[in-house]
Image 1 (cartoon, helix red, strand yellow):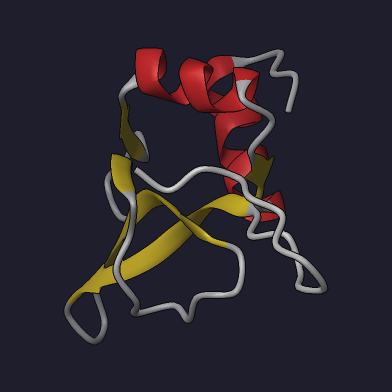
Image 2 (cartoon, rainbow, N blue to C red):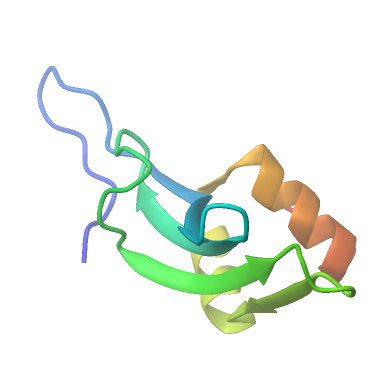
Length: 95
């Protein structure tokens, strides 16, 4: 597993919880994944935490809350869009 490391004279590899787009052209479904901060959108993820389907009437959200809590306690950054989704569905969230 990749952990936060500081190398001599290099940037710190930070981890980020973000959305990754999946699905069809006009019907996207988003995965909530943990990636290195400097990775591109389609790059490999460290861990898949859940998914979000904005097309369902109730805006279906599935997330592994135990793993989310674990990574939030480790101090992982959360992307602003993921934070908005989590606050809307879960309520008070300290990220």
